Length: 298
Image (cartoon, rainbow, N blue to C red; front, side):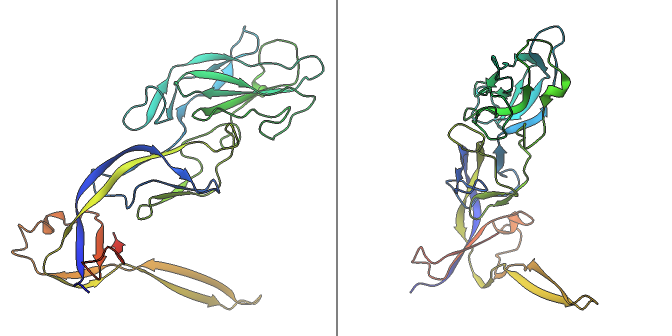
């Protein structure tokens, strides 16, 4: 068995924007690369599809069945015209919603931005009543994969007329997809993004909106003359408080600081010393001649 070795993040390899993979619960999405660097200047960009700013829908007075969409910005890394951060800007424009036919008076039209960065109306199937089930008759339509829903128009009459403001819906999470909703937590070690709530399966074939990520993976270099490695790890405590209605329990956790002893050459010119105050990955291998087991700590 070889001697232990400790390596530090001495460089980075850029990873281009990619679509993450849904774990199957529409909550956790994984990148193809990990761990992900969080060193200053190399922080990852996490890009759930959705509206960033603007996009308010209002009545297009004087034009039957039409609404005006205000200029907006969206997070859509794979869309035509997206910048290096995955953002696109869409100019204001008008969209026409479709009404029902004959006795099927109820129809929902989704207002979207498609994969080309253009405003697009997607009509649902008309019915005698509304449904909240995607793709159902009377329900909101499935949105093409790669599009973003910015609102809905819901008609209950087949007679063409100005849209009523009460027929326009833009509730976040129900009628509109935002990039910052729901909130999420990032696990840079595993290369995973976990949302607080499952993403709605509102797109064609019952899939969720796209979640993209770009970042960097670390390049490791050995720390010379090192000893006494201690990995950062969580500690847990449980408390109980007696009340008149019985004990009330609580728990908490805290992350302990990792440490090691390093024999520097002069404490100034050492490559590792120059990285002081940076957020870096460290990789510890109890056997330097074997790829596994290993331990990552940041």
